[in-house]
Image (cartoon, rainbow, N blue to C red; front, side, top):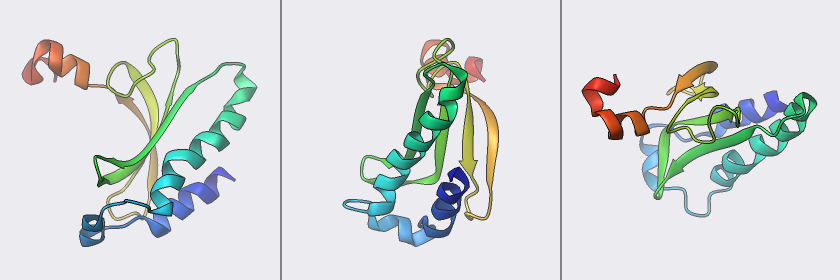
Amino acid sequence: MFSEILNKIMSEYPTGDERKAGYSGNDLYNYINEEPNKILYNLLGIFGKNFHLKSSAGSQGNWAHVPWIALMDPDITASTQRGYYVCYLFSADMKSVNLSFNQGMTDLERDLGVKKAK
């Protein structure tokens, strides 16, 4: 069932100039921001822990260059801006999706400056 979500995103996600149209009222945008979370909450329930889940196709009226689905352990972080988490990242050409281990940089960059945070 989760693989169907990933395949739908890869086959329907706008690329290049298609992203310029914005996502207002777009069904796929709503699907990406809601459906993965519903499925993953059920799948991850076997661990007996309420993981924080967030997926995104963009913000402020613009499509993201690549969509993502983050799974966060609440003992570590509840935000992609800090701590570390597991994330499904789609390739820019929408031909693949990778499971990666990410570290939030937003808070570090704000507190330390970009150079020191890196």
